[in-house]
Image (cartoon, rainbow, N blue to C red; front, side, top):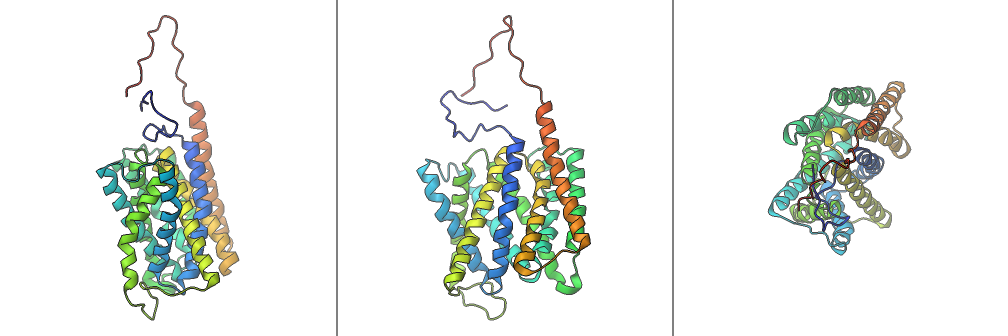
Length: 330
């Protein structure tokens, strides 16, 4: 049980109890926002070096969140442990973004995201063994049902894209570890500060690579000038990506990763809609059935958490003969 000092303020982040429904709502916000960033990455990645997209993404994150965090009085690096975990988080995010942006060059938007959804299974395993989180039978079933829906959406064809179809699996491993690391430190640092600090540590790792010459075919490194319209697309990429990951970070502050993992399947329907409107990728009947199954699995988690919250026994009021409760420990 977490204890709160008498001098604690509402912004005290070290004593926040789990609030699964709030965590789920924040994760739903992530699922609604982040496909826009992926769609923009697919659009821009066809013309610009992938690392240019990553640099813009982290630069926007720094510009958005570092000033707000400092004005709010948050500490970006409160301890050596947080510095180390934030650096690990930054490296995992760099790897995940590069793999995802690479996959989006050759795969439809919905397929790339859906293939990556072996991630909830990885998160369940990592959450159980590294964070000692409870993983119940119903959560496992919800993940399995959601993944079955994912397989209906994906319909992968290795004959069409070759080994590039495995890139989203690398994304899954990178972001599974990323989410577990985020959950492990979510009670020790403000989410805004964590996002800003991650950007500050990530930029020095990727920005120097912009000095390398641009390759002629499918460039990875280098910097190409953008026109007026493309500049706004880069800005939107940074804003959607940064806000999406802020929502994800907040969600992990309030709910275990095992609870949130099945909710991420709801990212697939949004990606499917964007894929149709932006790239004219229309899912067939089997894919539509898969989307329905995926949504059903996610909604089940919401209803399950609501039922658990309502069934949780409230603390009994002390009777006149009972001793007073112990004071909170500082």
